[in-house]
Length: 355
Image (cartoon, rainbow, N blue to C red):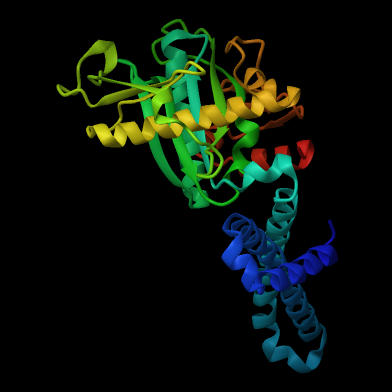
């Protein structure tokens, strides 16, 4: 879709939103249109800002060419550098907006309006080192989320005595969060020398990542009679009890057998809320799986069995290199990337895969 087509669609949306019948009779459709309007406005305003900057750039270039404005040349040169840098940033931003813009009329894209994702990271092959890698991935995503201004909430976790996690489940919330995180689903492999390895031998470990859409309120209807809720005491590493009260919650959806739990909060009601959020995301995913063969293989393709061979990305610390095997591209400065500087990888995946 070209920018001109986007502008025309925006004008049509404005006309639709001025219709009183739409506002009073169809609140769900109204929400879709308002979300779409917000997305299109970002694209249009960014393009407008780029045009204004280009005009200023040409003005500064004219000043630098004209000997009459010698006294202004230093200011013009400094401003020109700043404008060129800003233009580059905005053009990348516009490219990104155009890549992952959502259209509510497309059924497959409908769920992408959700502004929340639930991410599960589980230790695979590698024992304690795999659990530490789970912690590293969680830290990497958390720091990236901070740079994006996303809200984060831990829904469930199972820490180990070595400071890692057997599993951690958390939520990111913000507009377009799914379009930036959806390519992270799969098996991640790490090659490095563990701190406990005295001989200096390189170990290979894996962790699996699943990225689940959090359903909107209107997407799922769960009958309370279909749920079995069990309460138990939260435990820490090695089975050590960390809470004397039965504040941990496990919810089983009886028709499907899906189970979700949470023990991160000391409050039983908050843990129940967290477990329900996880369960709803899993139910939505199962619903999608049953609708089409493509979506039916989605989770299997993401999780697999967390074996070394089923990898989407390798983190090679001795060679200071991260390689994404789907697009056959590598990046260096691995320590910086692990500190949350994921933008180059995510942008490359969005451009190359475009799905």
